[in-house]
Length: 156
Image (cartoon, rainbow, N blue to C red):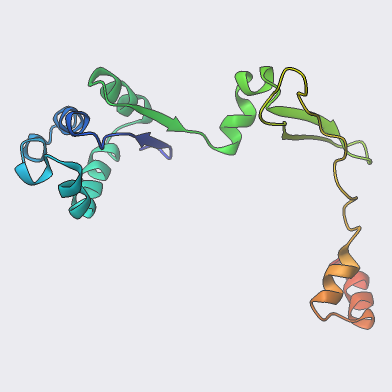
């Protein structure tokens, strides 16, 4: 499906029938063994394959349009890039722009939920890059001479 993912809520009995009819799988829509959710659970792999076969031949927009027209609840699954690029996330302060100590700008997740009296905010961006390198490497058993060698060759 053009590299995107979609969530489809097709487990209700009537929704399942609409879903299968929408993807031209009337054989599954009319199968008595699939009329109820417990029967569908037993044949999950078969249904996943049928759904995959259909979605893989369509774009995300085609899938969503078809399911919307059939009244099958569905929605695009956002990637991190989708979230950062979505104006609504920024408008709701779900993505906050901060500046690191070296001046580099960075986007971080906002505070959830937003409460009217105590909306929350980020007070500290965390330690500087490398602040705990020695401690972490020591915990992994890397001694001071190896640490020195790693520094000398530019690994850390």
